[in-house]
Length: 481
Image 1 (cartoon, rainbow, N blue to C red):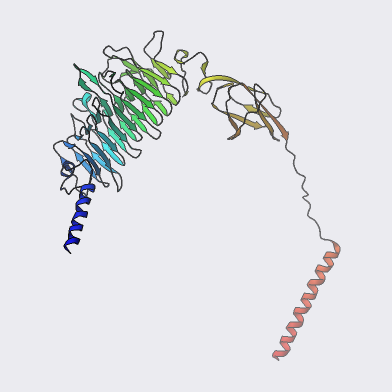
Image 2: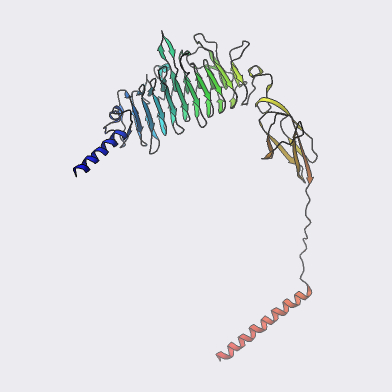
């Protein structure tokens, strides 16, 4: 019996060490975090309110269990610490709407934070010192990597910056924001810049750049500013998702690479406004703006676009304040609903097709058909999906469709609504269609009359049936008498 008790005691001790510690509050639980990890789960509907900072010093998971955590001071992920905030039973909420001069959640150099299945609510109005307010603040410049991941089912809402990366003052006041990796899969909605690296941040030759990655499924929205604000040295990779703001992207420092996703600028065309603390006003309604005119930045911005869909309300899709020989916006691809100036194209070989796609352009020639219509653009970029509308005249139908490249080789196509579609090859193409008359089948509308012999047999059959019925009735009658 003693051996059994000793065994059970050992098992319980191991379970506590791996899974967590007993705690009356979330703060107590996090204070007890270890390098092996602890899980802190809300066990009732009470909202926990804190008037002091909560700091995670080791490895911990906060499971909101579908409930709400109220914060009045910052939740800090310390240097070298790892924190995951999730919710196992419905989406949880972190309510930090009353925090003014401070960040609801801060990640110190070398810390790691992951948020998923949780809504983080920041202030709904501007803070007293808005330049120091980010809902999620991430500090670089440490000796080890700082990481933040916003999961696909996570949301951040509020005023001022949604996710902001800033640097550490070292080396005589120089500010570095290196060794930071931010991965965004979820949703961010703010009044100010939604995502940014900000401050006077300079490159650190001895460390990796800060990196922000935006992936498919992400929804990044600023209702009154830029969705992405590149004001600090680092690398910004827009690989997918939807970015919406009065200006889509504003870059003043660092390298921005856009390979996918949708950039929407919905600001009023013909108007300007300030973005960030910079004095230069930028044109609203432009999908991508580069401003390298500001003194104080040590590294000029460069935006390279090779893919994505760009929707602008202004007359131009992209704009740079640099009017020198070289340009800091380089366009190699993408689809734009407004004109891209030739000076921004990566080479003289590129152009913008009638549908707005940037690439190497080739002609589309249509052989005029009889008894029908074939309509398409007159040019397209290599790799662009081209839709061809085909309609037969009344009384006719499509007989054949052929697309040939410049060498006479057939180009494959598939059916589309009202016609066909194909991928533009690295060649001019010729489209031909023929139509044929619809043959109306001859139908006999006269009812076929039965033959005379058939009539006789039919009436004879009916007569015999009547006689049989009458005979049967007489027999029944006699029997009953």
